[in-house]
Length: 474
DNA sequence: AGCACA
Image (cartoon, rainbow, N blue to C red; front, side):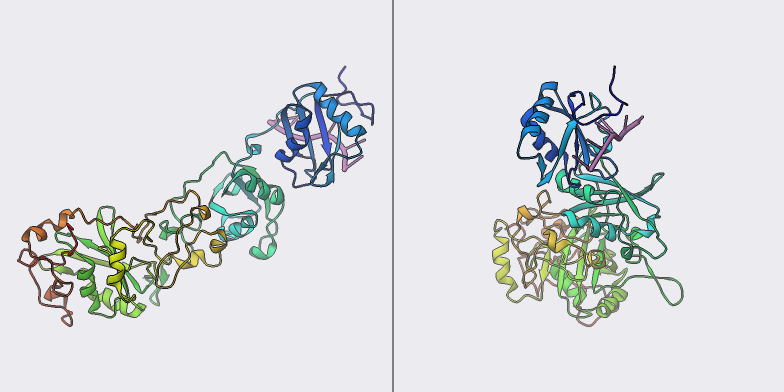
């Protein structure tokens, strides 16, 4: 009764709603298959990438007559059926329906599940994975993990078309040997589609990346060879140094302004840039020096000390991962002392120009992004001279939030001119007229032990509100 | 260029 399992000869196959297509290009997608077949009827099922060469496919029409019309048409046509110029041979399948058309992994999506066979997690770096898959389009995110199946990676593209292109090209292939450690002999990629559409990447690390969000916090414990604490000569952990200090301000009873910080930190050298931001309800600041050694001296001198006498505004200092801050030249939360005429810029920016550049650190954990495709992918905002950021082009990075909050990143908050922070209330009510930046300089407590350049201490409860910005309430 | 999937 059934013809399946019996030898089928040319011209003698019984018609079937299911057509067997051969000699397809290896790039052939389901979409191309449907394009070819749908003029003849309604397609209810397909099966692509069949056969050892993955160059065959099945298409099932809703009605037998539709399948017959397609076979008949091309049997008498002077133009053969083609996909991208390649002749496709069509015949009735010896089965009458497509069964088990798609495992979940065959349902196209924008996220690929890649199993890398024959390797351990440490053998293939996320940068190599990124390099390989970036050949097909912008890679948004990568997450890697080890499961029973082996070393796996989820790779998020913009759309299913791009993901399919990568899958079709790389599935069952190998990562080039020169990208792998010498001891790795085989590195087969088995690629299916993930059901995910948007990966949730929490940290930039050696196992996960979000290339749409370069300001995502770096997980220090998860970076190999980069943020891993280097070992000093004594074998103890050595902190990675930087010319940028991250200051956490504890017990902040009184306002700490950019000017306050500038005064305090200028005692040790030229302060280039300052950015103040809130992190987990705590005020932090990034202070940029020209070089690491200056930062180191400042860190040594200021760590654990208080800006104001009485234990107020205690400083905790560490080295930032940033090396060059990109801050607004003049705002209540940031200052770029390397830009001349900062006060002019202030007038422009405080007025709230639409689309005014927000604050972007120039770098975050630089080595992570070294040599990747950011510029090609349009992920990194172009830097203009003077630390400003190119006008944002949403088309370059659809879906990317305009502001990103990250460790050590000032998220470009709107100017808080109308609200006085609670911690500043005492200073405000202590009240005095607005003062010039030079006259509102606070003092570091004498016990800090760095008298040069630091004015005499002023008690916070006293008549002089330390560092009260002149533009609050305006 | 010649019939899959689980």
